[in-house]
Image (cartoon, rainbow, N blue to C red; front, side):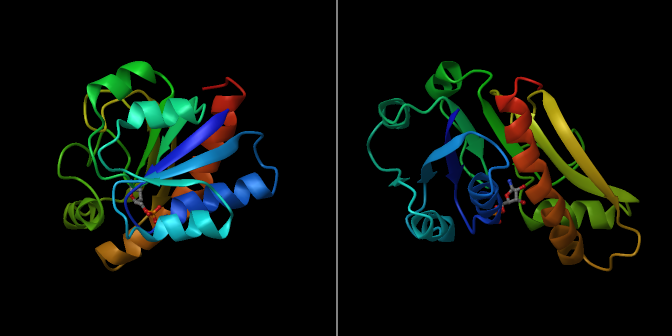
Length: 184
Ligand code: GRF
């Protein structure tokens, strides 16, 4: 698969994918890294690995992706709702990683530390990460993979976030491998 990774921020999940590609963990190529924010640190990570980057502007994203021959999209901390046209063109070929055990703690407004604050305040015993297909419902597409951890010893939302992020990095590269093998 020729993959585009879409992000808005730090890009540690992108880094995990770049490292996995370099290590031969999956066969797919990360052909393009897209950000809706010009100052996203993830773009620097991409450039450091000599990856092509694109900052969203006025051009239609679908045509940019098609021009690059992209056939699979990974959302990794992309804080923007995708347009209907893009969802339609890439139906069944877009995955997202979310830092909770969906369907719990998902949906509009549930992103970043807010997710972990809600989990912490609810006194959950476990939390984790979910990779799911993307459709028009925020965090509502078919769940592909989940990984969970006991969080009873963790003392703050930040500690939960850091712990879940480690799970995310393993989960996302595994999801890419399963998708390219047609398992998921
Ligand atoms: C991750 O927690 C991911 O689950 C969520 O956004 C965060 C992105 O982190 N969708 P990073 O930019 O990959 O470090």
